[in-house]
Length: 245
Image 1: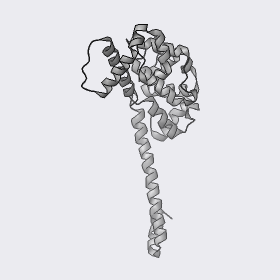
Image 2: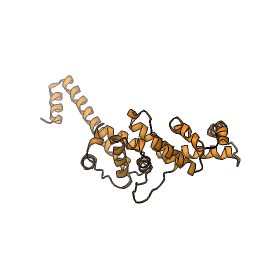
Image 3: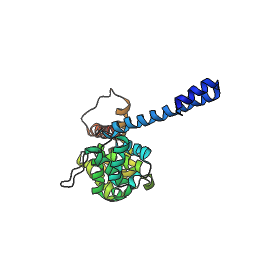
Image 4: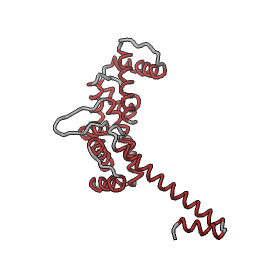
């Protein structure tokens, strides 16, 4: 007997309890369908948008595929996404999913500066290549550190010296001589090895200026080393937040 027939039968019998049960069942079924449709919409939006953050992709795949999805073969992941959600992984987001999967399966990015470099490129929307070395921007570096920590809490934010030194080199090559505050706990001490004693003395003033810029949008900046370094910190942190959207 169909649900419609059952409801009509309940009405004919004058059974309000049975009718109420049918109504509840109908509401629950509709809610389940709504959630499924919402998932279809979300995953299509997420995995068809090259700007989707690695953290959001990771969290969503955990929710819809289960927390052990990264142990699957990539063909199984692609097949499941296509069959269940009509999503074809390709381009930037296929590379991003592969990078996320690699971070979850290997500790390499914590110790190998080249692996970290490739992960940072993938997480920032640049397909990692192996024919030539490309360097991520400071914002992409910050985003990669935060994303890796989010995906691998078991590592307790511990990165090897080679990776920390590489991060500092990227910052210095981009004219940044003070470690961005959001990851200073991880690479701040290492960064001190790459700057002069004069800059170390200016660090408190630069960080103070950085906080002032954050809180006062009308602040007037000057072309001096303190303001220049504070602006570069702000630009790097703001860029990292864009990657995390």
